[in-house]
Image (cartoon, rainbow, N blue to C red; front, side, top):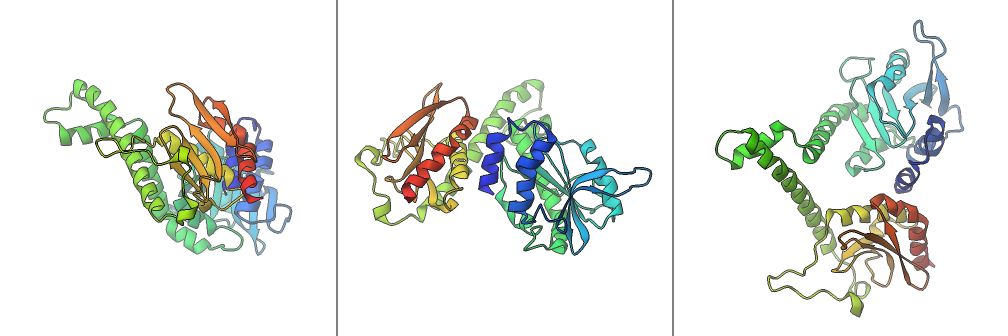
Length: 354
């Protein structure tokens, strides 16, 4: 999963056609994630054809078969474009004339899963599950696993689809409101902390406050989870810091002066996704300091994978290490720049495994 996610994020800028999307992203998804043999026509039929009414010879990109019956239909679009409702027109028609209960619309990055909750044998307008390889929601992995070759459980997927559909829509609504709150959302919070009418002036005052409060709340939640996870610790011998990385002295107010930012945590997740091609995810951890944000193997300062130098006001650097643990810093314009150094990150991990 992590390997394909890193591939999608590092190559999406150069994958500009539908065929390239299928070859680079969709076929690996079918084979490595779902576990079907893309070269066995008894399991995966490319360019699946079925006459639909007056429509003759129309094709769906892939049909996944089980026991000679179509179970999953997959329609692909190029990764450089967003998915739209009109892209699913062929899926709608094919869904009604095959035994498939699951239809998938994808651009290689986002996978929208549909079934027939609203009317039997008629594909729903809205997906019950949306899986995004650029922002993996781990809570969806158990449901995705039910569609794999080894653990195929269609009845369980269908029974859970209704709840997944509404939970997914609520989560996406919350994400949208956190990024760009609408008037109703701003009014909701303003009315609980402000006395008086919700005027245009009040809206202008509270719009940035709601966005700022939402961002701080999410950051605090992430930090709390990380603190809990790190609280379990590792053996003392593994975490002994070097002199240059000793714990920072506390400020007079009781703090350490270290502030872990959301951007650093997002950068850590990218490095982790890349490094997971070499080791298990739980072996990759982070440790923040005043001068840099470290990504380590086995929570051991003697096994650095990368450093994020994000404390500067204007420039950001990614530090990677050679076999002698010498750090080379690379200037990056944004978090996406980390993917340009994916092989160097993997090499840093491999040095510790030699």
